[in-house]
View 1: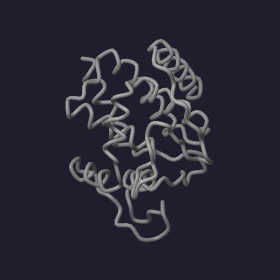
View 2 (view 1 turned 90 degrees about the vertical axis):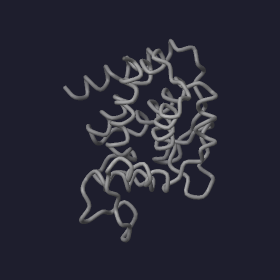
View 3 (view 1 turned 90 degrees about the horizontal axis):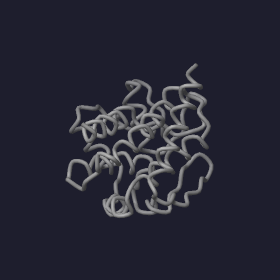
Length: 191
């Protein structure tokens, strides 16, 4: 039942995005990592593209770089579908990559350029987490491991470091709190 719902949500999101009239970027995937032609990851401490999109979208909304209500209507189901892939576990990286491609396609080139110019890093992720009352891990141990950490803090650490899911899923996981914040912000843009 979850797979049917997820598939329906993804197909709906793809249909909405295809109607937006924006050309899809030309991303590639390297292993389990989504790569974008719009958002570089070649600077020191760069966040994974999915985290740049999430944190950058929040910053665009908060700084008045307008995400229109129409655009938010397109982006919202895509982020909800991405959130569902995290909850479902074991989601194929191709599904995650397709959603990230559609999120980029739904954004205006100037918005993606603005996010790229932010050069978002793990430090920015930590600052966001602190400002929103999310406890980050203290580091140490192998990347992605988080003994003694809450599941949310562990997911935040794994996502910030680009570590793949330890639950056997094939894709890296965006922090639950960050995705929830993007979804809530987009919902507010629609109202």
